[in-house]
Image (cartoon, rainbow, N blue to C red; front, side, top):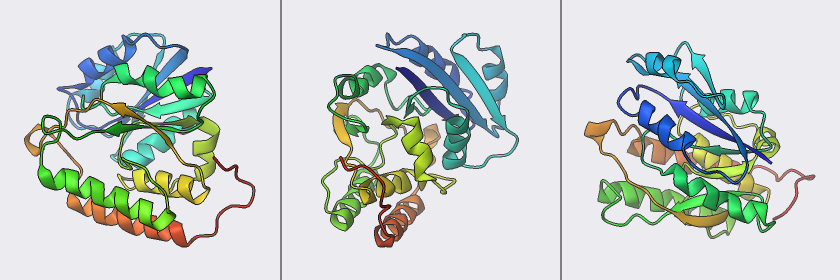
Length: 235
């Protein structure tokens, strides 16, 4: 199996070098490729990516910022792997957890795996951020009669072909809710494994806001009212 690690990047000059180093240093249990999409960065991110030298790494550049969902779509369109996982460049997630996400796939227990953040006091930058995340996740559970623990997690691992079939339209952070809503609508329940997490604050460049949470709930409602595709597998 080949895993495509997809990294959307926007104005991360202070972290991108470490993010690449950490991700490429992991001892993965399978072949990997890493696709980085520079989503119209206006700082020194592009120059740092231009100096990166690893045969497993490919960099794609958007001339203008289009949003996380658009960056992931570009990466997925260019992915060569059978499976994919999203890894943000902000150092909030530890790429050492990716092999743990792969374990249920490699031993046949799951097809879609989410990394579940525990949100201990040391890992969440604000009470309202955690409550917002829990609120969006609860909305998904109520709407789809499911029980997942962390809808907004960056770590979503699944077959590349499955992601492409979802036809995700959201160009920004709404893609997280759209992906999960479309999976649950197909009755595909993500298998969850606990992961580590260190949130950064606004002063460190945190980009998601309460407006993204409102949009996520609206997207979940929209996906719930759509008819489930007939020829989709159940998990």
